[in-house]
Amino acid sequence: MDILTILGILLGLGAVVGGQVLEGGHISALCVPTAAIIVLGGTIGAVFVSFPMSDVKGAVGGLPGIFKEGGHDPTHMIQYLVECAKKARKDGMLALEEEMRKAPDEFGRKAFGMVVDGVDPKIVRECLETEIDVDEEVGHGYAKVFESAGGFAPTIGILGAVLGLIHVMENLSDPSKLGGGIAVAFVATVYGVASANLIFLPIANKMKLKHKDHLITKRMYVEGIASIQAGDHPNIVEQKLGSLLVKEKKAESRPGQKAD
Image (cartoon, rainbow, N blue to C red; front, top):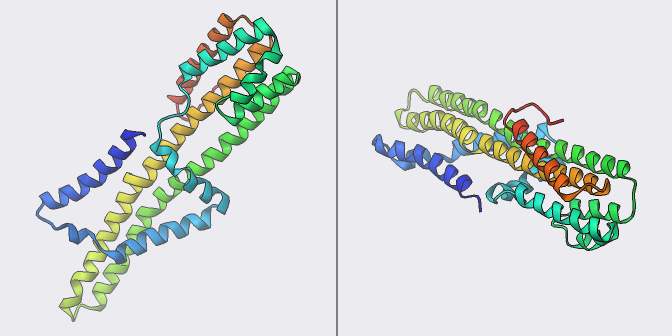
């Protein structure tokens, strides 16, 4: 369980509610169903218009993943592939058939399966890298759904504020109705800005980071398998994978740059 994700959401929302209470306000003042309907309904509608159903389903399906710790530890992955290299060097490529069955994920099973089947190393690399490229685009599309929601929400919040003010202007002669209109106006803006900056955009960022770690694992598979097929000594396999990990982490710290 990724404690920081849960703690961050609770802390962010708690700070807003706590600040309201410390200022002498009531929590009930933030509970305006009309504002919630306008902001959340409008944001979801804008997302539906902007993305195909496959991306929306994928983004929603990926939500549980942000609350889980990252996949395979890169250090453990290096050691795992080094052990595979030792086994292949000692007993031959067919010895990797066992790894094909017990690999920790489908990508690994596919990679080892091609090695055991004697597929040409160049074709193995091309197939695996193509799958990584597709996976990279798909994962980015899922994160983009929440990123776009974070862009839409504040604008929809402003729309809710305008609607609230219109309600106020229509009822200037009836003071009893002014409070509700003003509440919708201001709370809709709060909902829009808060949901964007405390929920949608952070979720998008966390999904991107999780997906980058996932891709790093796959790239390590590609390099490890290629090195094993080339007959490299296990120490060389370890050095190559260590260098790849350093390169990927540097690229991760420089957004917008893809590792070579």
